[in-house]
Length: 105
Image (cartoon, rainbow, N blue to C red):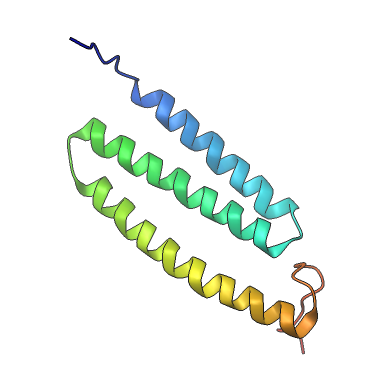
């Protein structure tokens, strides 16, 4: 019989905090829009890990439902975001965030 060791929820929450911090630092320091986009996805996955951890700890399905909706929004964001990146690259020949200024007057 296998004995499954239980990992305390605090370790999951620390991992989630580390992942979220890496995502924030990457989103603030990078210039490539695709890397910024990946960092935002990393932050969303860190939030999902927190939802699942607290859902498991509290014996509730609410966190799982929220994580499912966050994943659905992230999938839609990925589709729309990548389409925007393709159009930006076609019009400006770059996807660096510093060089794209389409919203300026």
